[in-house]
Image (cartoon, rainbow, N blue to C red; front, side):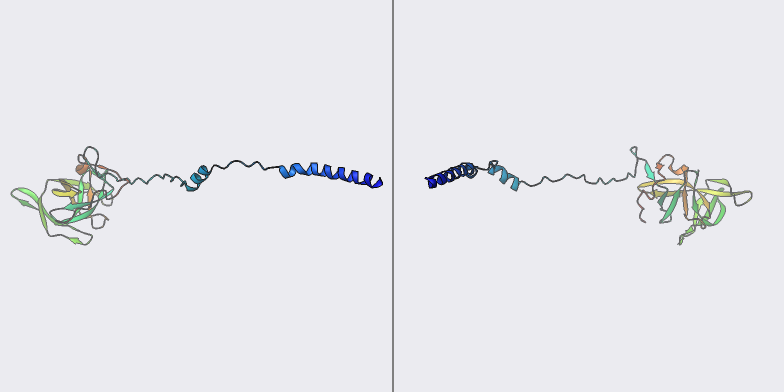
Length: 207
């Protein structure tokens, strides 16, 4: 009888233990359902390319919309009579263009004033040139007293694809950086000047 009393509590304890532990064995972890098609799509999907802006190459114009040349502060000028191209400074403050001339001698031909001269600058030594004088101008120099009388002649020049006849004052420019200076009398009707640019027009080739 005593043994029965001891066994009964043990059986009751074992049953309670079984009741407590049994639910843990039957628990199932609730995992989200995996969409296989979605997984494959994500694995095979390639990243979209990132669009980048391509650099825009700006071609600066050589002419205005109405066909005038655009000149920089410095330009190449071709003189067909000399078959030479000269580096020239474009001067909006000068009225008349000028070209470097040496050995200037005036003379008379058929009752009109003529002048003969040579061009010398940057290693260029031209043959002697003779042209009629269009007019004479008085030049006052800050470095010298009084005025100097200089001949003005007409000559053909070419800048880019433009060929024009223009006036040039003959003066010794061998001590200056540029053998030719272009003044307003040349470009006032055929060109505009952009002093922020240089050598806008292509260098004309000797013929």
